[in-house]
Amino acid sequence: MGPLTGKVAVVTGASRGLGRSIAFELASSGAQVAVNYNTSAEPAMEVARCISSDGSRAVTVQADVSREEDVRRMVDEVVQEFGGVDILVNNAGINRDRTLRKMTSAEWHEVMRTNLDSVFYCTQAVVPHMSQRGGGVVVNMSSIIGRMGNVGQANYAASKAGMIGFTKAAARELARDNIRVVAVCPGFVETDMLAGVPEQARERLLTQVPLGRFGKPGDVARLVRFLCSEAGWMTGAILDLNGGHYIPS
Image 1 (cartoon, rainbow, N blue to C red):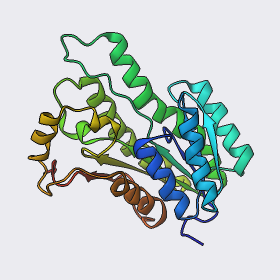
Image 2: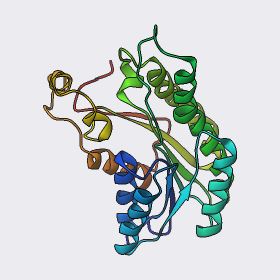
Image 3: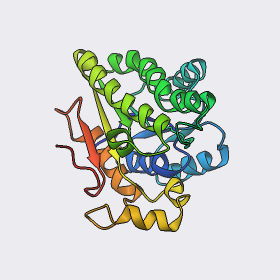
């Protein structure tokens, strides 16, 4: 019996990276997990199989979360399978890095739809189900880039900063339904996205991290689990998890 036993969690973009680690962490605390994916069916099914083999329930749910109709169908499928939704982790995200002079409008809109529009669609879709169950938790996975900006990532930074604004507004609005909304802003974590950064650039980044190492997916997943299970009086909070790379004033 874990602290999330009986809870139902939806994790978007859960077939790999941070989403995968978060799905495992929530399941290890007793949650039943809906593993969302868009195109990576086999990795998502492997996540669900691993969770199930450890004694928790998990299903995969395909949806392009940048499309409202896909999100509505996904949530309906989860509710039909598990009976409701208690936790939503808005983790799905992409980057299309390019300087402002070279960025196309298609690259701008693709990132905004996937990273920010999806947060609105998913949150709006689960709110009625959370309300019926007496409350819930929405965790929005923002980024250090949304806090400090970065060259060549205007679209990504804008989308992640938008998640922070959405979190603050939704937290105030949904508190009446006992729905908590928080945002996590990870720094540079050892995922496929960081692996794609050239070695010299990674070395330069590391010199900017006072704790002297990049994050691990488990670092982020454990914070998400805490927010879902033990932070009952926390809402509207923006949590920086970056080894000291960015310290707000």
